[in-house]
Length: 384
Ligand SMILES: Nc1ncnc2c1ncn2[C@@H]1O[C@H](COP(=O)(O)OP(=O)(O)OP(=O)(O)O)[C@@H](O)[C@H]1O
Ligand SMILES: [Mg+2]
Image (cartoon, rainbow, N blue to C red; front, top):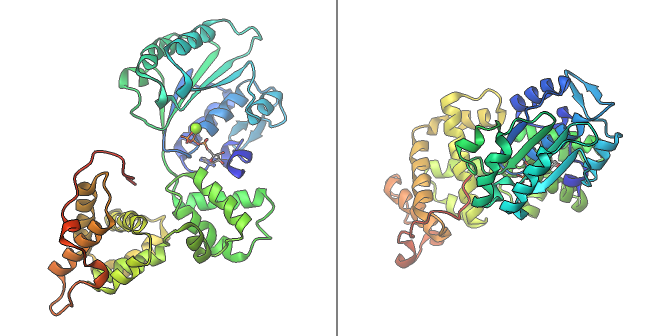
């Protein structure tokens, strides 16, 4: 599996999170990494990968010099152990979901003991959000002692998993999802490493990798896994990829949102053809992206610039549609009902339709029963 076999092992292969990578690169020169670090943020954004690079580098006798940084040497025994995930005396990885209070206390003893091989040790606690409440209690003790030769890196998907008293015992790094163009670039780099950049059809480079990057929910891991399947299944064009994975491309979103903004009921015909839930979230994000673009005029988002200029004459209607989506999002909570979403969109059309517009299209006609507001739930729905 590509996402496992091709975990980046040098700083320049990490995509996104530029300020974190730039700081870690500078620190790598003297290997002065903080003794306690929290790597928090979205799934598949490089937390465990960065922790592994640090762990491999810290005792590496023959690191490889990169541009303004030191990278671990993949041939060193340290690196080999980490790459094979067998780990060794200097680096150990703990799965927090399997750790109770006793285990954290035991780890505290190990961290406090002298390193008998003389080098530095790195303890990575992965998925730290999964530590039980009791285990978190003793984590404070684990983190607060001053240590000379031990580094502890806690990786957590949930930045709020630890309260400020624990978080402030170390340096806190918040990983964010890289932009679609960064992810596409990363996929392109990976194709190069696989010696496929020249052999895949050009359309894969022109549009396929962008379709993957735009639909991976900000997770590089998911993008790499989708790339893996595209290569195996020979899905190369954006259409083939959309078909295979049920993606809705930005061009399609643009078309439908434009129809909606024009109060054109054929939008419903388009919506009906696709996975409604997926469409709802993607178009919501799309409209919010366009509004953000209008506000801050993102210079590095060419596709948005293009969409923006085309949607500009609909500027006034966009906030209305966005508010409608927010309203649906809040009211639906955990109980996503596509029919409810359609019914609300239909109401919006009816209320705002230009005079003479026909009644709601058949696909949007729903029994009164289902168009009532769904109960509000607190959790469980995908928020993007
Ligand atoms: N920033 C990135 N740059 C390049 N590849 C990445 C990046 N983030 C993730 N990947 C890819 O995804 C895989 C998993 O990444 P990693 O284990 O670092 O994610 P994570 O942030 O720890 O996610 P989780 O919270 O789910 O554990 C890597 O092996 C690599 O292929
Ligand atoms: Mg991880």
